[in-house]
Length: 471
Image 1 (cartoon, one colour):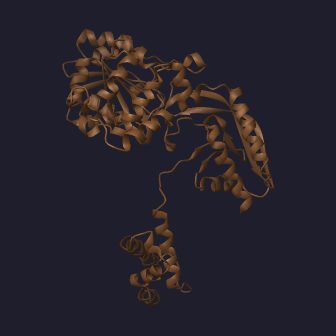
Image 2 (cartoon, rainbow, N blue to C red; image 1 turned 135 degrees about the vertical axis):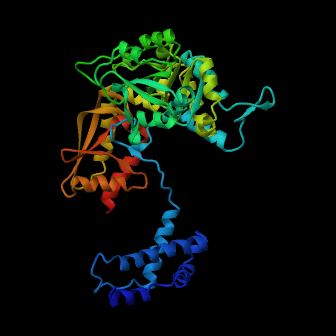
Image 3 (cartoon, one colour; image 1 turned 90 degrees about the horizontal axis):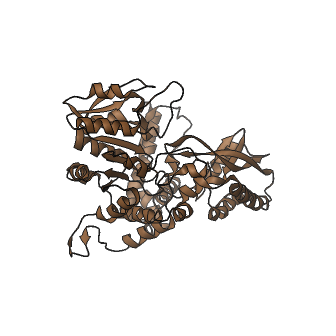
């Protein structure tokens, strides 16, 4: 270490001196002194690291004044009061955007969360019997009514649901699955890896593009614990392909006394084909095949909170519920409240299509998107932003979230260009607002997709663009 760096280290500001400046500025009225002290140590630690790193020539570099260091500490302390998890406006056109929280909750689900969280609840208390109950009972009945399942269980996400079922039915044994269904889900989690953690041994059959019933039958032995079918909800194989329909696998399982599981992934309670979308198997139709157990997500096509829903035969579900791993994967009261409120909307499919934002976004006609776009376009143009051009154009939205992978949904877009600002700077500024607006860039234009924007968010978008006038 050279002498200059050693000298700089000697002049690192003392934490007590920084705290004295901040105390005079009244910072401790909002943030406790001990917290500010920790922030101060981090700031001084950064200065020390900068000196020791040797990454640059520090000959002309000078130690910041004590007041400047105090400013840095105050800025970091201020950030501690700002939630990192925040609401954003999704203008990307990806309806189930995994990075943006997938499905927004319906108003009834939000109200249920507030009501249950503001005090105590009957989470595990049977109000009729006056004794301890089961948290699963709150949604078990409505799930069975809506789908025709004999029994139901809900855990914290679908990967957990798959893990729990495999561990219950096939730990230490083989689970047979087609090579063409060994999918990777969000966050680089792959079905074979989930199976390995469950204790089940993977038994691959068939080829990537073609699997025959005889492939499954040849693989069945005394070591077989489960036949697993995975719905490829996040991609499609086209061309010279063949896969075995679920009813044939169910019949094969019954013949050999082997349970059959279908991981639906997205899980849909309404036939979307009626609304011009590609065919997605409904949960009820899947259960009608006689399959032993079905798993799917709560925050995808269902339009509810993150959850893993397990439906199926009563005896199978009894074993799954009794698995000690179930406790580690169970959902909390807020998720239960939101899920129950969401499921209630499905008692009338038209209500679900109206109240659940994910479904509404999926089935709304392009003409409705165009009408919304014209209203927002007028508001943006009335801002009279110098150098900005707003125009209307057609485009397509995507379902996202590992659902309807090949479906392009016609939509209306607002194209934003500026004569003075590069489009990436516009995108960055919108992304750094108090309520960030997340959009996409195509052909040197910022695009706002109306299919993922709610009408009540127009004011936020206009307020966001208003900041370009103020800067």
